[in-house]
Image (cartoon, rainbow, N blue to C red; front, side, top):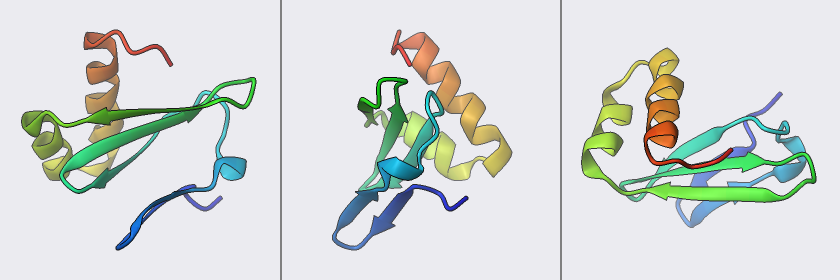
Amino acid sequence: MDYPILVEADGVKIKAEKMEIDKLYYCIYKEKILLFYKEKNEMLNCYEITEKDVVDEVKQAQSEDIENILQKYVEKNNLNY
């Protein structure tokens, strides 16, 4: 399946119909991390991470480590998803 979040020069495009329910998706856009997930009732949720240390950590991380970094951030900040 294609990744449902696309970063383009004019902004971020979300293909919600391609998103799995309760799965976390992310992208980096303009020095921010944008987190997206779709609830079982099809509600789309978005969070923005602007903390420079977290953004830099994700940018430098191996792709397999990024989800762990983001999960720790979500738990630390009590973001429900």
